[in-house]
Image (cartoon, rainbow, N blue to C red; front, side):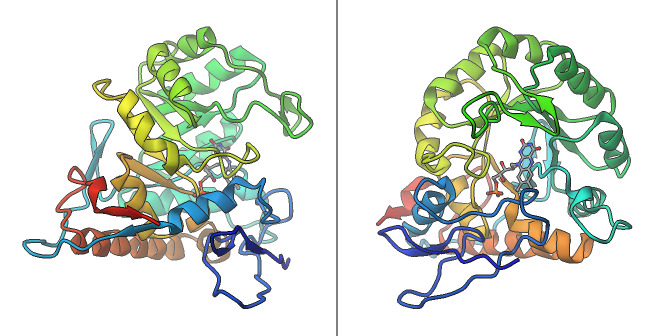
Length: 342
Ligand SMILES: Cc1cc2nc3c(=O)[nH]c(=O)nc-3n(C[C@H](O)[C@H](O)[C@H](O)COP(=O)(O)O)c2cc1C
């Protein structure tokens, strides 16, 4: 499907779908990178209420200075939840991929899990039935299971506890998936979602003995509530633009980081991080690690596991290149003072 996404945000022209900048002053028809049927894979019209447009513009407005003297090839290894990974890049929860391809012999969810395992990066799994989840995690590798804010609280606790039993290194909830576009609580695959109170969150956190991640935090207020409810991690995110006019996660990341200082919480961030350079900016602004969703999706759906591994390798190379240029020796040494905002 072709998708015309040539937009002008006022600052620069961007392809809001892929996140790539377009060459200025050229009318371009951009092919959608999403091979799946419309509705399964997000396709954006590129208008200003699409928060992805603002992600891209904000990311592209951040420039770096060079710090070359004494700079050495960086060490990308990163500890997350007490485990060592090859890099701070993790593979975001992208649900239902086993249903989107015409080729029904392929299982992109399993391919993604295998790619993460081979590349020694953390893999996130979102909305899947317990049966499908069980099949995917048989591939091995480390997983964070994200459960939807279902109206049925027993269903939530059942999914969280099964994930713990099957060895998830952490579990959590995409708290940003409450509202639907009709202004009501959303319904996904016919399953009603519901509101999340502070007390609910506390209950979910205490229903498991692995770290709990609140995914979809976009304010200091929610970050502090998540901390007080006992969450050990957050993902600063708006879930590829669930909220219209959502502020870019990287824009609120520094104030959230400041508010959580001393809590020991792990702070993840995502949102249109399409390259290792984008990931670098998130890490420099205070993320401990980042989630890459749409940045690997085209490769995964089109060519599978090996192409996904190659893409992770490429992203790691770009991250390493940027760290070497800016004098950042390891993933504990990111420094926002290298950044300049246009
Ligand atoms: C096809 C697709 C399915 C997704 N499904 C889930 C999900 O089930 N649970 C969840 O927490 N996030 C889900 N997400 C959101 C991603 O985890 C991520 O937060 C978001 O896409 C932003 O990252 P990106 O800009 O790198 O794609 C999904 C994203 C995509 C593109």
